[in-house]
Image (cartoon, rainbow, N blue to C red; front, side, top):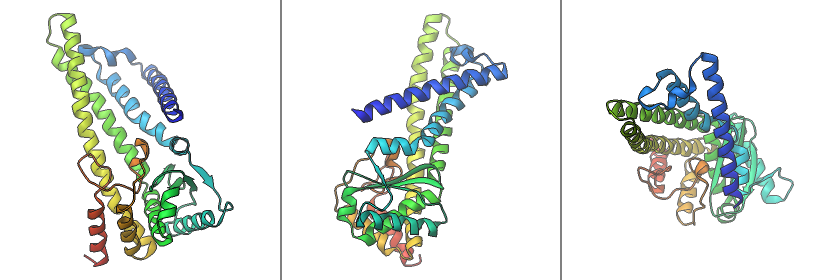
Length: 295
């Protein structure tokens, strides 16, 4: 219930903030903000502003709030290493990997759940790396070190920002072209009621179609970044072997389910499809074995 409430409140706040920004920008540019919603009477400038603010705005605000939202959504507790031997090892391992990756020490957190781990944060020098209690219990330290190397590679590569920008641009394109196509299709209708009905029918069909296409691009990019993060872990640890062992171990564990906003940067993902954020474990292991052989 807490997670649902947090999700609703956050999204409501984001929508209000973006609407305010939209009207302020339109006022500054001398553009009628209502022209973005007039169907066949669309104004391209107001539509472009609306699309950019609502397409990019939600993604950027979510990214800026990502650490806070992540900790609240999974119930993660930030540790500093004074809590016990396991926590001390975890913090010192992340510190060592951060130094090797040439990024500042991220926050380190633990949360209750099945085997998984993730990284998030708007800036690579102010990130969060979190692991589940089960992955700590069920993996050897060398395997867990490889998982942490994978997450630190996401941080060092700036994957959180890159994914956010791609998602934001695609969102803006979906909004813009959905309204544009709907306006063109409905502009030839004689009766106002029929024109409005056609506009909204086409608009929602385009939203669904283009939204699915945009999702495929985001998932494809996410799968590519997983291969890069696996290779980054191998580089940080000096060998692909620990990451290969960690992925094989993951194949025998029950995967922890993360909120949608965190799935892209989780470690777990056994099966691949066009709508998967991760390649299959077999494909990832094969890529690391090719790296190990120098292919």
